Image 1 (cartoon, rainbow, N blue to C red):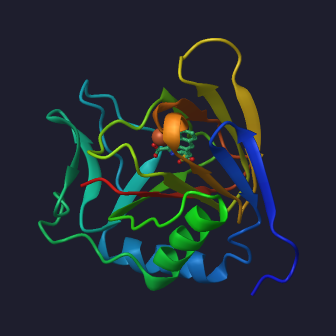
Image 2 (image 1 turned 60 degrees about the horizontal axis):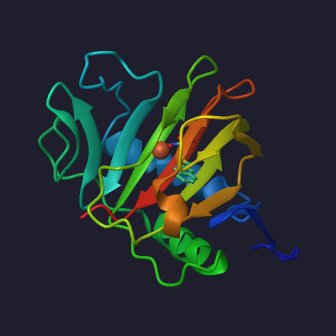
Length: 201
Ligand code: MD3
Ligand code: FE
């Protein structure tokens, strides 16, 4: 249990950093192992056929997926045909508490995307646009090792805000920021995991 005062920083309008909110991360790290034992990490391809550098898996009622047919949410894991594993209780409790602490109120995600970045992996600028309901916030949790997150805002130009995210840091964004462009640099040595909680359906 955390006992230090809660650090809540609005790094940009409606983008809130909860520094250390998920620390210590041991129970989350263990839950990543449980999920990925049932739904292994895999390297998805963009609709254009390029492999993404991060490996991904999902849990929840649906899971984010990409192949030649496009970006979408799938109700079952296409690589096994089985439903995605349930969102672990420790994940769901964290996502709800983080959205509340960040001022976004009640949040009931139906999916959690887990991204795994080896030291050479990164994610280019994009916005999360495959969900039905943009009124819901997104909660992101860094595990493993630190990386720099880039926040462009509503247009993908100009110099982005750079935010270093450490293991146990949680970033929550919603409202107008929900449609913002963002990117993630290579992790700072070691493997980084990111949990992204969304209400997709
Ligand atoms: C702030 N993942 O999977 S989530 C993704 O570190 C993705 O794996 C990143 O972007 C990762 O789509 C970062 C953090 C994030 C995502 C979207 C945002 C922060 C955001 C949109 C607006 C503001
Ligand atoms: Fe994203």
